[in-house]
Length: 93
Image (cartoon, rainbow, N blue to C red; front, side):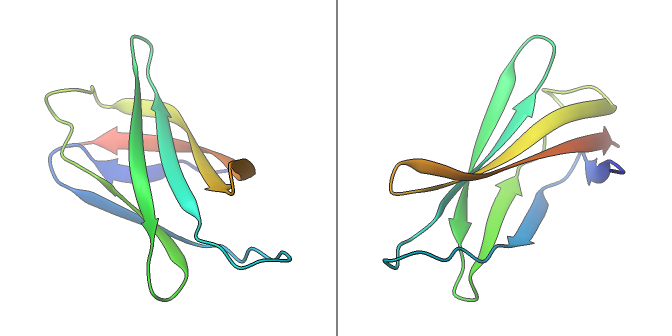
């Protein structure tokens, strides 16, 4: 999969449409985990009124270098990990 380009020097919004089916309705909790060589960052997401999962990645120009980072999108519901999507993020200025 081609890396997703994000900007280091400005806020980025990432949205995913996820359809979760089950016996009971519930609210999904999402987290974007960004893995770096010296540290990992976790960004909490929210489910909007349309059912899309949204994560805001703040400006990271003082934290990260321009390069490709491995990330994981985790969706949790009722303390179970339902989706764990591996992505690569290409951060650049």
